[in-house]
Image (tube, rainbow, N blue to C red; front, side, top):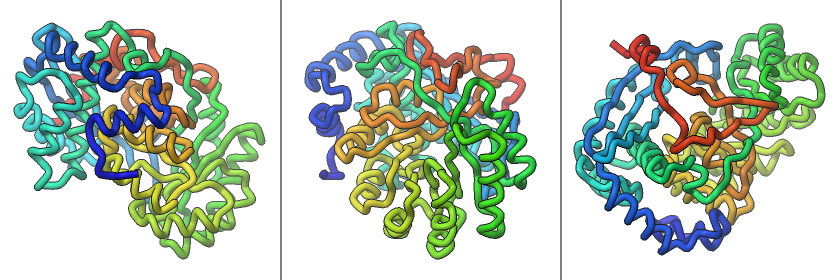
Length: 398
């Protein structure tokens, strides 16, 4: 597979590999072009930075997270439609720089048609010499997601329907906690995470010893029972040598996957671990665009993949990555951003698991609904997100 493919070539790849296979590529692009060129033009935009407190602060091998720093984006069109998205900066130190970068990028496309592929190519060309990673790619993804939201609203359809799918439940696992708190606290919190009918959840590992990891996994299993699917995540906290030892030790614990045991971009090391370990290895949240996913697949660095919307390139990048996952027979899950990810998983041929977090819930007017362990895609135009303006005002970053 040629990792240099771009634009319509990627969509053609998606067409032949099965993703959204009933699309006629040229007709669809023409239809989007007509819709955006004739009806939707970027008139203005609003970018805001908020710090939202987490219901359950999270301790990971990479550090402690107690607040959710989010950049909220509204793209306003001449036709009165507003496309929305948000991105998560992980640290408050990156919050204002990311918001400023999104703001500056939008000045480049103000007055342009709301045509995501054209916007993507224009912005990538402008920023290629700086490098299409890090905050640059996060900002590009925010704009892409908001543009697709506006297009779906213009059609009066949920995003999933614009992409050729149907509104349907998407199976989800609860990722709202289970940090490095010790076996008693983690086991007690695991029982709380069954609320909403969840039958799957993720444990953060990376304790001082292998024994510590095993004790936590076993405590959670004892607390929730054998019918609950358990995943674990090391958040890149191990060396390759440590990972080989710990993953072998976890092989008998019935885990659904072991996530990011080592540095995410060490594809050779991850391939070694994946080959040595019986439990599937999951990576992908740190793929910077579809090109990284292509490299990981070529290196056989994982058994499962889970792109992150703000790193993979928004909706456009997800579509390309889903085509590659389908061609490789690779089960594909999501990382964070459940409100938009649910729409995209519903049109992903190798759809696996939605990662559910409630981190944006406090600033959403209509949060994503979970029922019987499934995310319910809202049957309203666009991605379904509108802001609770009172809450946004409360959490604005100073």
